[in-house]
Image 1: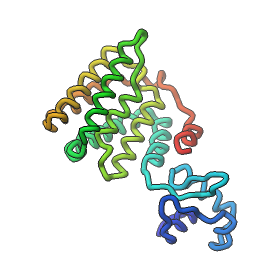
Image 2: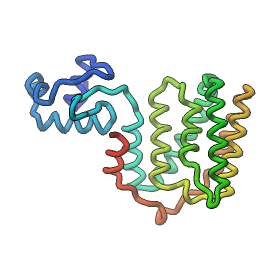
Image 3: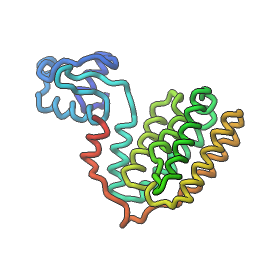
Image 4: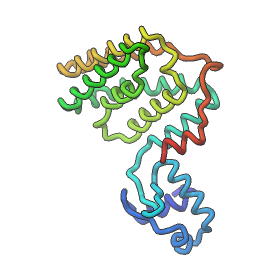
Length: 236
């Protein structure tokens, strides 16, 4: 197995399950014949990737696998190097949502529809404030909710990474108010279509909505996030 991490190899070989506690670094060092310093490095990588959780009193616990932390850190780094990567990742996100749309929305429940309508209402309330407030959290939650029941951690992880990068680079802050209102008109259409079972019409509304994504800040205007510290905040 081509894993350079002794920590991850230990988890796999011992078939550790989410919630299981790992031995201490010193105990694993003796068992594996690996230096404490190497294991500490491996542990930090595993923690940053969200694969383990380290707490002072409870020790190191294995976490449920999530692709989001690894994808987010990688894309944050890429976009910090070259802003054009955000457009590339946006195209990937578009293909994912459109490609998995029918499979995802068939699994939505009446409670999900109610929650989606509540997000639309809350977002519109924010846009009607003086001054208006950009409903980023509602926007993020709205899109992720459509795909919440998919049993595909890679789809979920990539979509979570998209919204983390979108927020980090302040993309939503540069659009005009009329744009945001138009976006939420499309969101309302998407919910209405799904609620009446017209999934294809909902997909068309999603595709038209994504066609509005033309308000991308110039490279000179885009803020550069502190990627290393941001990674730690995201994955703690």
